[in-house]
Amino acid sequence: MTASIALPRARRPRGAERLPWGSPAIYFVGFVVVALMLAPIAYIIVGGFRTNSQITADPSALPSPWVFDNYAEVLASTTFWGEVLNSTIAAVVTTAGVVALGLMASYVLARYRFRARGVLYAVFAAGLMFPMTVAITPLYLVVRNLGLMNSLPGVILPQIAFALPTTIIILVPFLRAIPDEIEEAASIDGCSRLGFFWRMVLPLSLPGVITTGILAFIASWNSYILPLFILNNEGSFTLPLGVQAFASQYSVDTAKVLAFTSLSMIPALVFFSIFERRIVGGLTGAVKG
Image 1 (cartoon, rainbow, N blue to C red):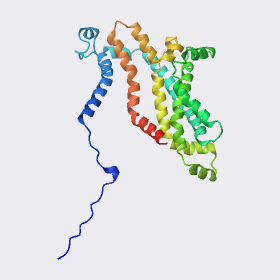
Image 2 (cartoon, rainbow, N blue to C red):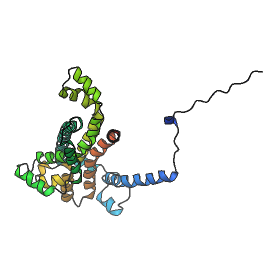
Image 3 (cartoon, rainbow, N blue to C red):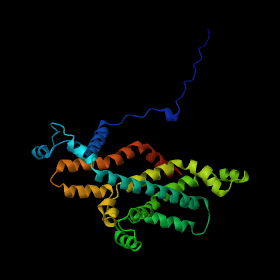
């Protein structure tokens, strides 16, 4: 008789183990939270397709019939597109300044060794504890003394300054995680520190750069308190100020105000939805670093 040999079963790797789906109560709570967050946005967007009489008769009902005139009138307005242009300029320039200055400052704090490095990093970290609303009065005086009132540079420069602490906190771990051996090998090959910065540091820290850029763009697009104090001319209004001015001008026409508001927030929602994974990935890398 031949003895049968029992072969050992192949073990699953730890990462391949199936995780349990979890309790249905957790999914229910998550669904309720998401619904509560999306309900106001959906109400504003759908409300723009209604008439004022429909909103007055039943504020929570669906449009019957659906009216597209409110959105058409807002899209045909030159004021709306002028405010879109101002918000785009402010957001793009702010993002470029935050990424450029934040990356250079983070490179110095992460890769150079000098006495005041820890103190300087602590100063930037302390900047997270001072929101713009606290410093709005002295900031207004500084902008006025510089002659930047009623101009986009008067909004852009403070936005860059207040976004730098978050940018540096995120980027420094990325740059510290780059092995010193890579820099040593690059220097042996004749690469300068500036060349190492452009050829190695920038590509390796790209997830953090994208994350900080997205956060700076969305924060600038949604900024309200700073433009409220700096911009007094309607020709230089950004979209948040434009929504306020439009709501004050057409306070009786609720449906058109809802249409204007929904069109103002859609770009930021789409932008954030597209790059959501980039934001999470960049923040995860910053924590690991």
